[in-house]
Length: 180
Image 1 (cartoon, rainbow, N blue to C red):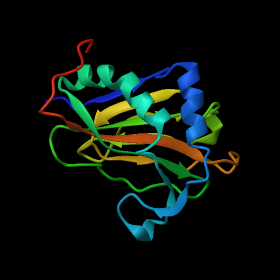
Image 2 (cartoon, one colour):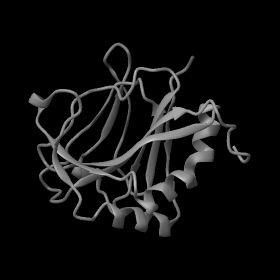
Image 3 (tube, rainbow, N blue to C red):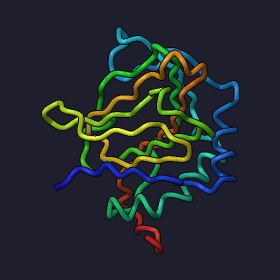
């Protein structure tokens, strides 16, 4: 079975993108999150399970994700990761279970290529299989068992590189959205 990595430009409406960006600008960030190994150094995290804007984003994109996955999906966790210069993550998989997926969303209103901050996905042989810049309003839906990494932004970017992450699982008790 082919592994899914689907880049979705302009994932949200402009109003929803602003609402999500605003939600990630609250003072709820904490430091010390890491991909797999604490010795790799930490980065920032914000729990977003109770955020109305983040939940609205999921409801907005859910039919599209379910169509690609060909199954009903449920959110297991939703949160934001934040990286500044020198605080990249480590290569990791989100979940090894079949039927699990991740949706990453880049809510920043602006991003320049020279700022770096790419997300990279790797083949089973360890080669780069896909990559994307964290361009505004872009989403990426992928199988959670694909190794990937969020790279830190360059020094020329003075802010926090924000990604909103939805950890998803097949919802065997439900039927896909009707418009899927």
